[in-house]
Image 1 (cartoon, rainbow, N blue to C red):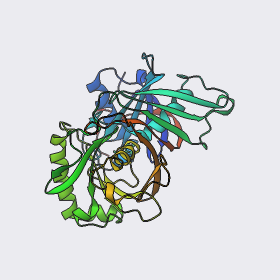
Image 2: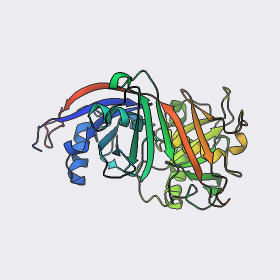
Image 3: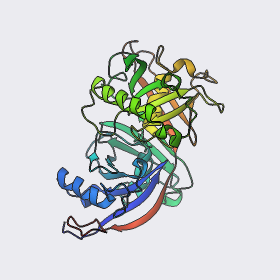
Length: 349
Ligand code: NQM
């Protein structure tokens, strides 16, 4: 790929996030070369991403790479890349369930999957973690209808423990926490234990230096406790409080430096799963389910998300498993074209 050559991509909103979607074959196969190119495409490490197409926030500094799958149980492979804002990193150590919402529609747009007449289901292999999901969406007359929702169903992850520390509760920095991973490594903590209500805006929470320093300490300790190595965007830290708007629980989630304006998809699945585990931190704050098996409604700074999750009753108590999980998102094709990455040696703006 020559310097200055453009790369075909579709810019999509997936749930509450946004980013370019590429076919894997349009990016370098070499990982280092790919990551270096992705930094230039997005405009990182500049915190404004002014010379790229990133949106200068972790929720808009995301990239999806999609290809046909060689696996029998999947139609497409989806690799997610989180790109640093103000930092020169590209990490594949986490999934993104929000961009996942656009993967099925993108696969149809690019002809990787043939659309059915009414609704199309695409089986997606999440390359980052080896998990799998099925996205089902409306395709009347064989075209994606972006006005309709995308149903995301997650199979239970094989062999990966929901409780990475082996315990339903741990203590970090003197606080009770639950470390959970049902698709997204997340630390659940009571907002009240951190001296906040849990109803503050993300801007208010980010401005609270005492809080952000504590969250940073919790994160550093949890990285080790959960065996996450040095993943720059993990774990997420979700602050729980009793619900205020008829939901199950209120959440404010650090991802892990900025506070999410909503909550990540797999982050929500992970928090909802923790709420079902007897003894988990924050489960006592949750309103009872309206009916057995009813979705859990996680309130967040800009609304709420309903998560369906079912525990496997046959799993041993010390090694809980889920049977399935799912939620509904939307996605939208925003722009289709050719992106021109900043050349590696550029004079200043
Ligand atoms: O948890 C943000 C997002 C996410 C991740 C983050 C996500 C998920 O909202 O599945 O979607 O936690 O970094 O895009």
